[in-house]
Image (cartoon, rainbow, N blue to C red; front, side, top):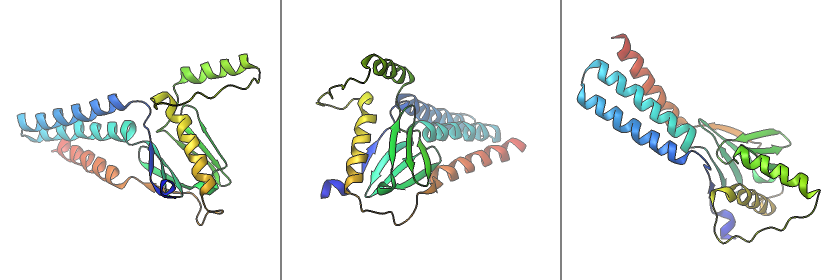
Length: 194
């Protein structure tokens, strides 16, 4: 089925506006400082400000959950946790996404629920005393519904995934972001000692 092989992306569910504001502001300030003060100090400050922009990208915009082929990818600030869909035993979204497999528990910070919503849901569950709640029909997907829709998609794709995982969950590093951050921080440190 073609819809089963397409990549699906979810998140980030919070911090997007702050993240983009941080990246844009850091870029404008960093470039502005370097242009206005083309000295060792100016370039050092520009490198530090640009490193802060990279951190804003890594912590607020990069995290997300992806369903890629028969893999679930929990993308965090500096790492990607790749989990075969058929290995997923349980998936829960609270403030972070938590995926349980036979090999362990994995967390992703990209898709989450606000704490106030979690508290409200728990209070509603206590009042319902186990009564079955009707599932609302979706006409459009807003940020609050992303966690539920993501769980539905993971479970649906898991049902169509191959029976056993060829390789266990594994970790990959965000090499471009780590290299850029290291270069900017190293540049800042070198210019600070000059």
